[in-house]
Amino acid sequence: MSVSSVHAPGAELLPARETPLQRRRVRAAWVFLAPMLLCLTLVAAWPLLRTFWFSLTDASLADTTGGAFVGLSNYLFYSGSGWSGVLVDPQWWNAVRNTLHFTVVSVGLEMVLGLLVAVLLNIKFTGRSLVRALILIPWAIPTIVSAKIWSWMLNDQFGIINHLMLGLGLIDAPLAWTADADLSMWAVIIVDVWKTVPFVTLLMLAALQMLPGDCYEAARVDGIHPLKVFWRVTLPLLLPALLVAAIFRILDALRVFDVIYVLTSNASSTMSMSVYARQHLVEFQDVGYGSAASTLLFLVVAMIAMVYLYLGRRQMEARS
Image (cartoon, rainbow, N blue to C red; front, top):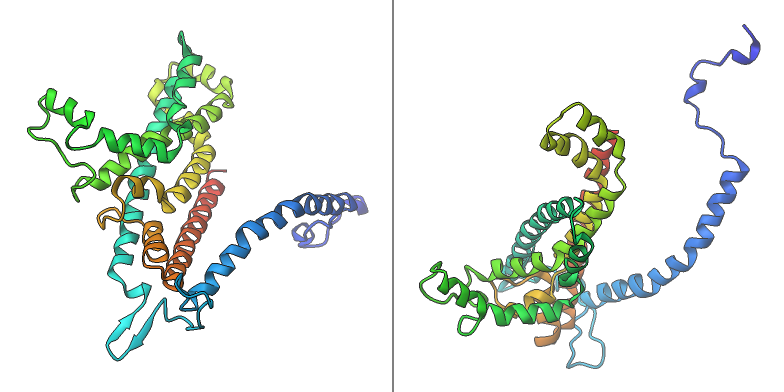
């Protein structure tokens, strides 16, 4: 046995030394990332820190002095009359529940429908390119515009949705879709799903185009049922794209404001965390309290995003 083939016990466990080429690549990566990190600091970090500072004051839009420092009183404060602050406000926790409900239902429907539409559009048929272009129209329409269009369509007096349902005999009287507390959240979810399914479809369709064709050719030769091929081959290969689409949609859904505000304004049945923060910042002109709500919204979004990414990474490592 040659000397070069002899290794000390545990030597294979020692980390490999970084080569000069790897160090140069790391330095080059930081150089290219520096402008982006600087822009993120200016447009994201500074406003976030400023919002957190305002949440520690009693600043108001009616007060030009900037407000006095009050510590964590806007979050939680005990006085002789009891507890006060965002964390003990029932409306805040109602907004949290509404936001989570909206996120789970809308994102779940968007993932399922987006994947199904992408699979259908991946099949070769006449006019496929035209259908692919048309499917993106809802996503191309600005959210404010689409929400306003849907508010007219869902109107209980002259909306076309009630007109069609009455004509088909599905309902006996017009439904107040955006005013009824039992229907308003579903109206918001329907509009959001209609708006964002094309986005998920686009990501899934791009992922389907990248899948290796030899797997499907082998499955076709072996006579495996298409549904079994979808569950055993297509879906596992699409998992990374599904995770990317889901995290984008979860982050958007947790920050939802425009579609809810246009359709139902400040209704408690659909009030999200963003609508709650806006109400205190603008309508009540309480900058400190509204900033505290905005900071909590950021923490909730960041926490859920980190947990989701962690679980997604664990799942990907388990599959690899």
